[in-house]
Image (cartoon, rainbow over all chains, first blue to last red; front, side):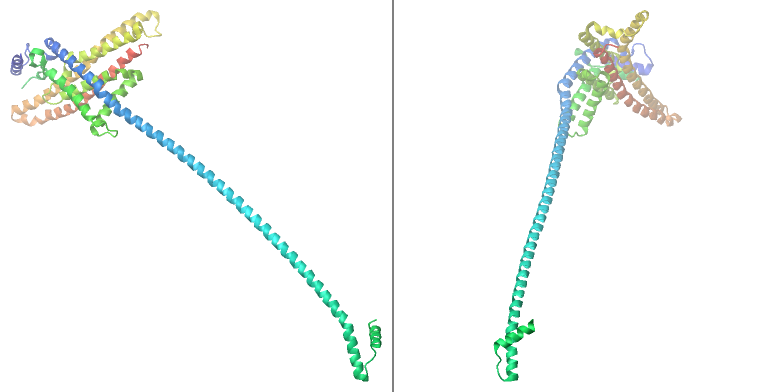
Length: 182
Length: 242
């Protein structure tokens, strides 16, 4: 059969269009064999593709898709966690700032109260000492003033003794001084 | 020099089981598809290499075409559509190798593939929708007196689908290969003629090269057209209401 066809082809090549060569796609006697092998091939191809190749291929693509989706979810969760941590940090910072300010305020007011108290105590002390000193001064002044009479009497008797050569009677000196003083 | 249609001869290889050059190239195409895809996906890499990218692109391309035409539920036909696309594409492209037989240049092969599609549509349509599937031929909103004509037209259009589907692929493959052979034959004839004609030989050669590029485009395009039409027809089986 193969030989016959080859001969046909050769004759045709030499003799131009030849009736018995025919048009191969319309050669009905070959249809059975082509259909048979097409059916066998296509069934085997379909089976291999649907059972083996396509599940593998879809598996790869699906696997990648789930992996990417998982990674994205994870990234979103991490971002949320980071944001949470950021908010917590800011909150802690604000709290610490507020506490520090309160502490500073407290310390400042405590210190000023203390220094006020100290100042007042010091002032009171100083006033007290001033008053004491004034009292001492006036006492000393009074004391000194009380001595002035005795000194005047002694001085007066000493002057009279020098002038007269004889000590005057103390009562007379006393009376004379009292007279001057009045 | 052989005639332009000599390349379409069916030559027996093992006559007892009707094994011919056509059978050989059918099996060759299937082997290339399965072997190529298995080789491409052997690593199951998350970040695909070149071969795996090609396999994934083919997968996504067919899947998108199918989902665009039929929606998500059409994915149950994905293995069938993918097998058809890959078989037609590979058979077309294998036929582009000089000296190789083109399986899809035979009307009986393309018709069998078309009947497989239409048969799937009809059987699935009736199994899934029962007599409601016949609603495919009765568009809604047509006035009563017009209905008989519309039904006849719809019926004819439905019946012509396997013919147009198979003829389109067959004729494209056949015509392309004949044209290539004719121009290649001119080159040989001019070279053989001697004298001034020999100088003209490069002209048909250029034409043959240009046709070769065109035929590669046609080979891929016809596989795509076959697949798109398959998806559109399957959509009728899934959603018979107009």
